Length: 194
Length: 257
Image 1 (cartoon, each protein chain N blue to C red):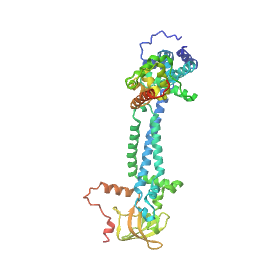
Image 2: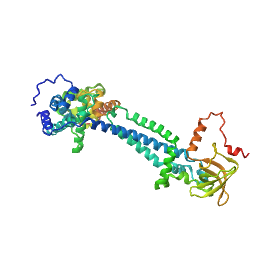
Image 3: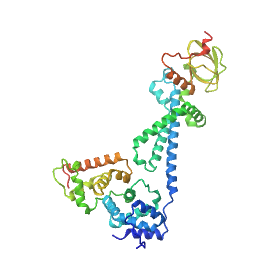
Image 4: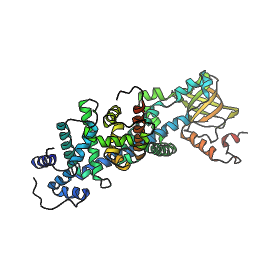
């Protein structure tokens, strides 16, 4: 454990970034804030094994540290870190050349939130179980799945999603609408074996 | 979960890792911005040469050489510069995409702005004769360019079909000498009723003549057109003049009448 007595919990992320540039040990507090969040996010969008997930998280933090001087103060630090996680996860998919499997199983209640969104829920004649929703999500393209995860599970607003995915706000809006539409289409599709 | 943060910190300390210096990121960003601006500039210059070639082409003489319009059009289009334009535009887009925060702007707007800026640079370079100069430089120094792009000049090397083009030398009252593309000197005689350009002819300017070959060295001119940037300037001047304004005639013929 590191030996810094000062309490950094009251500091903002951006202040911690500045302090880290002077003293790398401060980075520990910044990482601690996001360790679980980033790990869950990576697991949700990629469904990687625990070991691969941990490697990816380490990789994200190391990469963020090396590029700390590139952090744009106009952004939220969390958006910047999620962006790195997003890019690292995509690189990981490309490296192993397989389609990412379905999202993690600990998100049952949150998954139901996706299906209960009023735009998605209209025309659906019954409520889906978390398992059913996961199967639908698994059939969605990664780009649609990721925006649904960011919006409904990570509770990111449009600006944050735009900063994470590095896409214009309008494109994010379009992606979300299409993702909802695709989700609804898949749910309504006759003969879909859920 | 194992303490990933601690592991990462150990690695940072153990391997003495330090954040990359800020100037590296700034430099990278400036390089992409510079490359973006440069690409738009080159796109504009390529557009300028394209405009020059299109304005300098004669769209109506395909009948004189027994071609149909589509074949004529296919030969006139400046593919070389059109490819360059597309390439530089794509390069501008690529460089812009790599600048920091570029995703915050609508990509279609950036395309549009690049095209608009390219357009103005193109018109500017056209007016400053850059289009003509570049066309000539490429024509003289790039072998395949001469073959593929010089149709609009080659078409004026058909004396039997009544088309000659070249540089005016030794301008007299009703005749002048014309050095054609192959270097041959023609004695051009301006017949009565010859359609003249709306700017005075001068020694040294490029001209194209439609008429009739009289013999080995003599040519009767029924229509004279000037070529190059002078011709484009003339078109612009004509366009800018109000309808009721008189367009100055070719003085040199008036003297004779």
